[in-house]
Length: 159
Ligand SMILES: [Zn+2]
Image (cartoon, rainbow, N blue to C red; front, side, top):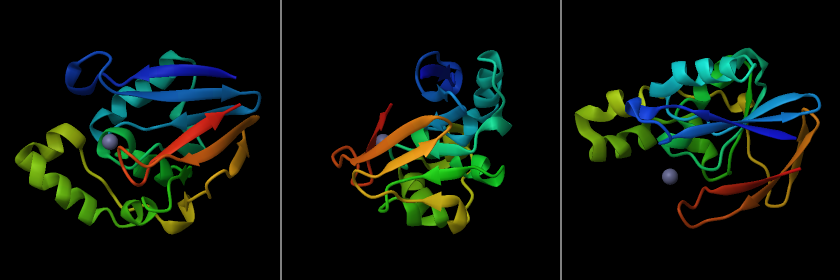
């Protein structure tokens, strides 16, 4: 198993937001997506590490805040399954409430900072149970619910 850190250079700033391509014996998965505003940087970063966005069929989210999960919908549209805490899943399926509550904080900077967020079809979303292990790409990822920063937070143990 090898972890590739993709620096998304959020707002042109190095080392502010990252996504992680985790390489197993059978391919790569993505942990976090960053916001949609860094979608191009994600694609470019994957290429720099020798991968391509279309290889990603599984995306594991720690939680659903925009800086971590804002581009998940774009990967789902390309066929990826998005693994997310059950309390976060409805907000990815219907992101309007999440988007509007963030808009109260960020106002007219919303689009610039985070980009758009589209609904994800329910069949592309999967909410693991606490302690459940997902096996894909020669990796085993176990979901541990870790509420605190957000109620919809998962720590993924990867082996
Ligand atoms: Zn957060």
